[in-house]
Length: 487
Image 1 (cartoon, rainbow, N blue to C red):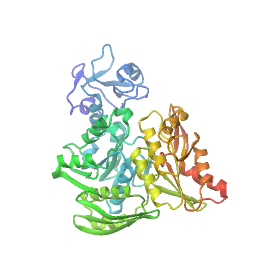
Image 2 (cartoon, rainbow, N blue to C red):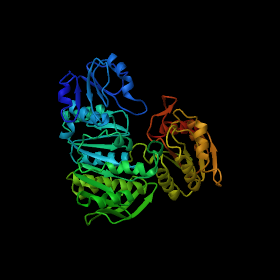
Image 3 (tube, one colour):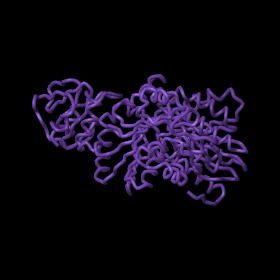
């Protein structure tokens, strides 16, 4: 595709004037070997402007830059915002596929993955050709692609959208991380519907304070979305609604809303509640666990209603939904105790998941968890205190340590629990921590293994080492009993 066609919708200047180039690939990584590439000079941990010569050496014939650079043998597209250009130019390169899709975006600290997958399953069950993009990867039709980022970079994202269009997909459901919003990855998308689940403590290493983090999430709810669906149990959701009442559908459990749930009853076998959708009342039962999943289901119900599915049909299928992989997922039983894995990796997420398990357990509550390295350190002692306040036995271990020492991370967590009376131990090796916890279980107990969910790896010193909480649990039980558990 000609460069002139890619850049025509953004206010940019081209040097040399009126120069053009045939573009066959997009890249933001100067190390990528490409043919006739367009290289984006993005600022972040590294400044792409410092790597232009390497990009040219590896096949870039044009660059998108925020400053005119001297003595370069390539076409320069100068813009005030290279990240904005990255989104728009990627969309144009793939033929603006987003314009041929109805895209549903989900914003929130917790619940994005479950809500996205519930919507995808509900839409698909009702004959609407759909795709889902998020933390667990990409799925549409018979195609399943491995996970990348929660929200992929624009060049990959719009390539995915193009493949959706080719497969005659109508709806694309996607998770929007706060980082993706801040980095303008989805700037070129006019969303059919934008959903807000909640906003709680996370990523303060990146956004410096909660106000900034909150502001970024709110910024996703712009006038370019056709509909908003917001959780009015959350203060920010109420704020979004107050500013956009005419285009917003609300849901909640504790506050007045268009769609709400009452008489919520929880157990380790599932949920029951009464669902009110626009004064139509339905008794609802599901095998999903935890009140937080009631909120996720309400969000999904609102979105599916906006997609043209009748409330009674939505409710009928809710009962058939199964837990999303790694999201409050029951994975095994041992010695009369139940074992669950959950992605909970924020203070609010851990509090909700652990509180649910503790409330439903007539024996003792066991918890295995850690915290990610090179990430928000402020939440570590907070999560330690939550663990100590709720669980009877806590096993503090490694999560994804990345470039940090697991022992240092564990010490940060310990600050919040060490002065409590809770029984806790520190076991840096995650497999050993899980094994020790399982060995101590008795009839009526519950074990929650939190933080990693369905992840199939641990990030250590720049490498992704194969590791699965679920596989570890099943293997440990076989070693203890000789009897394999059903996956």
